[in-house]
Image 1 (tube, rainbow, N blue to C red):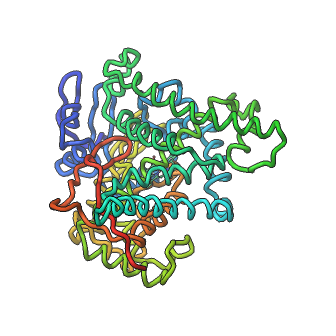
Image 2 (cartoon, protein in one colour):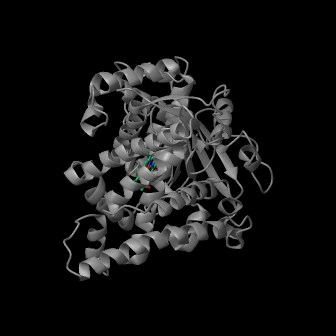
Image 3 (cartoon, rainbow, N blue to C red):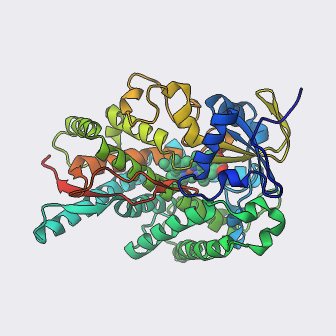
Amino acid sequence: RRRLPPGPRRLPVIGNLHNIGRKKNNPPHRAFAALADRYGPLVSIRLGGVRAVVASSSAAAMEVLHRCNGELAGRGSVDAWHARGHHAHSIIALPPRRKWRAMRKLCAEEVFAPRRLAAAELRAAREDEARELARAVSDEVAAAIGGSLPAATVAVACAVFPRVAGVLCRSVFSEELDAATARKLGEVVREAVVVAGTPNLSDFFPAIAAADVLGVRRRMEKLVGWTYGVIDRQIELRRRRRAASEPRKNDLLDATLDMEGEVQGEGWVMNRDAMRGMFMDLLVAGSGSTTSTIEWAMAELLQNPGCMEKVQEELKRVLGARTHVAESDISHLPYLQAVVKETLRLHPTVPIGLNKAEATVEIQGYRIPKGTTVYVNIWDICRRAKAWEDDPEKFLPERFAGRDVGFLGTNFELIPFGAGRRICLGLPLAERMLHLMLASLLHGFEWTLPDGQVGVDMGEKFGLVLSMATPLRAVAKAKQI
Ligand code: HEM
């Protein structure tokens, strides 16, 4: 008999909103995991006026992101993305039709294609930003020693964010941001991912979305407006340079300006709004998730001194007397790669995938009607999958030794970047930045917890990006290489 997946009892009007609420210590990915414990890998819920299904096993994820992906690659609606009409030009928010395809293709060709990533100037930019990260920490250590302290206490995400933003801006605009703008962008991104990711009444009761009861859209408008301002300045700068016949940069910005004003099919035009939408997605989606992953990795290593020692020994062995890490080193650093995989497994910074059924499909014998929001609980799958039954909650990079399990979207027990048609667009760049920046932090310094601190607060701050609730501060001491 065709039927919906099982699920908890619904209350009038709110449905199951009380099951995912805004309760502290019970963010949606954990609340969904609790429902999966009780009802199985496919759970039916109703969130206000929205019918939804949560997929929480690698087998269910494979159905959603592979077998039925043609029908399930739609995007659930997030009202915050409507701020300043951003959703109409956002790769993240657009339905999987021609405009979304064209924008993805353009970014893939101009930024993320192997040929572009291998270009000498872009590789140099990434290595340069990783060196800058080490230099910024060194400066803090030197200042502490100058002030007669033996080492510096570093706010890890604050040190990493400007360098990640630097890579993104250099990859997209061939420009760096000045220090003040990079710092402010860090604050804006941190706020935007929480504002846009927190459960919002407007998402569950679309009929009253225009009232913006919780003020989410209004808050988002300010953040989007500020980021558009940064993007507009880059566009204007390039326009002036092109008008002055300066040499082309042949980057994504040049490619979009070449297309400006042209009708691209389905009636959409490459104009300033389309550029703003596309560039903002790359800056915001790329910077927050990458920075938080590096911060989680450092937090895990600080609490697992054996792993810290092992990864630093590997770096020392492979790099020898060299002080800086090159991208070509990464393939010789299998333990570092395992540390990154294990971090992404335990702390996938995009914890929940947000799909929408564009047609009715059948999954594991259940019927998923057209229009259903299909959540993929990436966080739960990465901890629950049978493949991790050997203490899945433990940080254990060794579990990857001799195992051909990657995060490229083919092993459904490890899908921190999603899979299928909407797999993370920035994956190839994220992968490079994660290894390079983490290696730079680990190779140059001894890291410990601040004096008197026992353990790290691993509490999570839920949003579009799952970050550390208490930003990590760690003590860096220059290392003899
Ligand atoms: C550790 C870093 C990152 C993680 C864990 C991550 C994870 C994800 C995930 C899970 C998705 C959703 C996939 C789905 O809907 O099924 C996604 C989408 C996306 N990511 Fe990433 N991401 C990271 C870095 C980046 C970077 C560096 C960029 C760009 C510079 C980027 C750009 C995007 C975009 C544009 C999308 C939307 C794709 C679409 O809807 O078609 N991400 N990412």
